Image 1 (cartoon, rainbow, N blue to C red):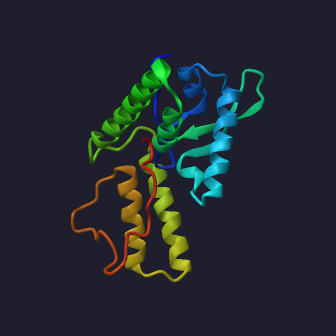
Image 2: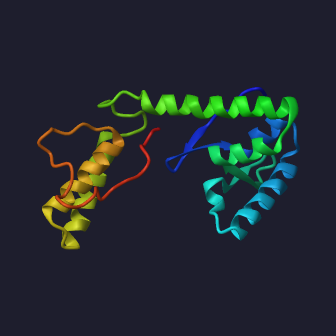
Length: 181
């Protein structure tokens, strides 16, 4: 394997530790052990290890859940700094390219185009349910509008320019990863 593929996970770009292990020519269990050690060191220094390594699981060929990590760009930087020689250079080039490719894909996604997998009917139902709950909770129409706008923006659904972008004096009430990204 000479190429890594970055993916999005809760709004963060990550690569799978299994792919990294293959790329650097180490057994996955060995890389996992190193990552746990790095995470312990980071925790001891009061630095959030989840900024570097996100614990995860996958299902192996025997249908058994196994641990792995989703590694952020910072985590890849840390791993690369521990490598030397040809493997270190190749891994650094691969992860830098993977994260750049994902960034380009995210920034060049056409605006005002509904992402694949987002159903307008599903969005309409979500908006209707959210509106009902917010009314029951006593939220104002402006607050409900701000949440609706945030959901539509997240799903790439364009709204008329007269639609309020946020409640005056407050930040948008909904922030999250784009669906279908």
